Amino acid sequence: MTTNDSEAMELKADDNNEVALEALQVEYSAMASWYDSFWADYLNKTFVWPLRLVSSFILDRTRKQQENDESNSKKPITVVDVACGTGEFVKRLQSLQEEEEDTSVRFVGVEPCPEMLERAKRKQRPAAQWIQATAESLPLDDASADIICSTNAFHFFRNKPLALAQMYRVLRRDSGRLVITDWCADALTVRWYHLFEWVRWNLFGRFRHQYPGPLRATVLQQLVEEAGFQNVTVESYQVRFWTFVPWGMQTVTA
Image (cartoon, rainbow, N blue to C red; front, side):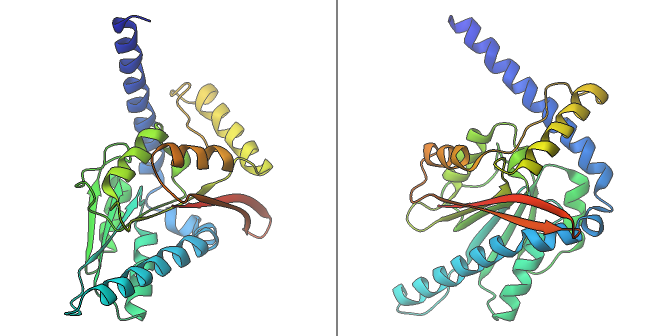
């Protein structure tokens, strides 16, 4: 393959990423006003495990800071939620920290859709910062985050390796923790729904061949490891929302 061919393929990939981003923004700008209410049961069920994990990592980080700092002065712990949507996950994390009377946590929500981000800003609470950006281009300093999380969004990332590379860059090397919760393509219902969305985008929409998709657990683990993360584990499980919908989920930590 010549250099010109490689450059052409890269340009095409960039174009595809832009089209996919446009497609998702069209989708989510339309549903921003009713997203929280319509998906309330789904969010309640899928937030349980990542909320527990992130909260435990915050507590663990706080304890280590206290043990290592003789002056007992707390440094802010930075938690970044990638593709934060309407900010509901950050809001619930903040509520949990308020219950613990821990005000030393700085929350950052990153979201590409301006309408969703505006909803997040309306939930503004102390120590929350909202940034419009994609997962593939995080406008954050190297090694600036203690915890990076992403919930119910990874399947929409068009360039998943690049998104993971950005997370790896932003996360602290010595003590940073990663928590990604997303759909699991090992589940039959998830694969059926993915097929439905693929058909809808390709046959009835104007964004042909641009629908991203969920991953199987083994594939997700491999991508995270290839991005440079250590001690990677993936747990697959099922949640049931709206009473009758069984849904495959997975949470990866590193």
